[in-house]
Amino acid sequence: MKTATIFRTTSFILGAALVLFAPTGCGSKTQAPAPAENVKSGGPAIDVSLAPTPPMGFNTWNKFGCSVDEKLIRETADAMVATGMLEAGYKYLVIDDCWQVARDASGRIVADPQRFPAGMKALADYVHDKGLLFGLYTDVGPKTCAGRPASFGFEDMDAASYAEWGVDYVKVDWCNADNLDPRVEYTKFRDALRKAGRPIVLSICEWGRNDPWTWAPGVGQLWRTTADIGDNWESVAWIINANSRLYESAGPGRWNDPDMLEVGNGGMTRDEYKAHFSLWAIMAAPLMAGNDLRVMTEETKEILLNREVIEVDQDPLGGQGRIVIDRGYGGQVWMKPLADGSRAVAFLNLASKELELYVRWAQIGIPAGPARVRDLWAHKDLGVHSDLGTHFDQRFKATVPPHGVILVRIRPGQ
Ligand code: GLA
Image (cartoon, rainbow, N blue to C red; front, side, top):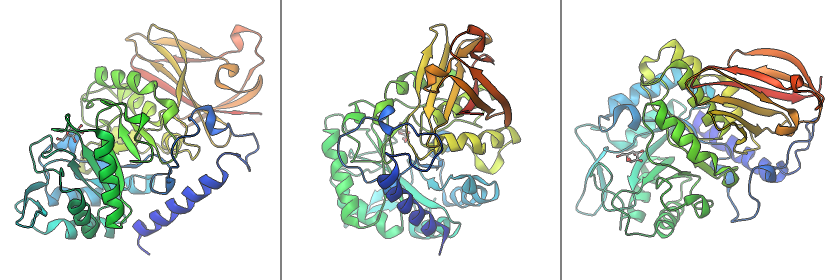
């Protein structure tokens, strides 16, 4: 069995297991927090099998824009295996805008023959042979953001082409579509994918314009919540703020998408990239790398391949972390409940001076008494910390660099 098939099978089993077992949190020593703690109950029935945890992979846009071709995709696929990205969970390789140039006489979408001479089917085969999954981009309007032919009026035909080529993930953008009803258009796309008969993740990219978190669960598996990210701290801080309010909408099979990662693209400091990655993890965001994976520095690898942080993002409970303390001057404490009853806690410093931030166990839903603390960037146990809920100096304290984060996992007990 190819790894891609194993992924699908594992996702399906995990998805089914979540449906059956997630609400009880059974099997863990400490009672797992009920999903309702962070996730709204009710709403449409969600098929979690396609995205039981936030999708992870790579997308061409942030680094390469329209400069995409099959050589880049093959080399990126090779790099995803060689660097350990695939092993760490990054499995979707997605070509964003500009792969398409025209429609043929019968209306079928045509990949740029100069840049993709072997065609999309051959490229998808190459990607699958590496154990990865393959993704493409389109738009619900008549043209993509870069002015390429898009899917309006061709939804069924495009979905059929994707299925024939072996596409596993499609990102559907919102350019040239503002006169349309997003719910109608994306539902049309979902139904076209269903008719095409291949399980394909639908990534809704409508930039949060029409509150997708209120209608997109059950339509797509993830939806953008903001305008495009930039490779700078202002952009990251602004997106964190916007996405922080939406924690109730996320859960297995339904993810807020604060946009792809900029880690490794050069516009931020090491601390800023660590904070960017940590906050995406604590917000249960899709982790789509957006840098050149063929030439990663050790520093970039240390961030993107930090298994303990990835575990926070991929935790099967699927709750999006939320702000539990907001100091107003740039200091925030975030908490994400995890399936084993522990808590991921991020001390975030949005200010430009070092800050000391404190948290009480009561503020993160941990009973008064001892709890074990582990630093997920230092990969170090910080020992048992007792907060009996009585004295100020019993609070857990973190000294956080400017534009930085301290990310810990706290388990109640000795
Ligand atoms: C929009 C999207 C981006 C990217 C570009 C491609 O701006 O939000 O993520 O897909 O289009 O043109």
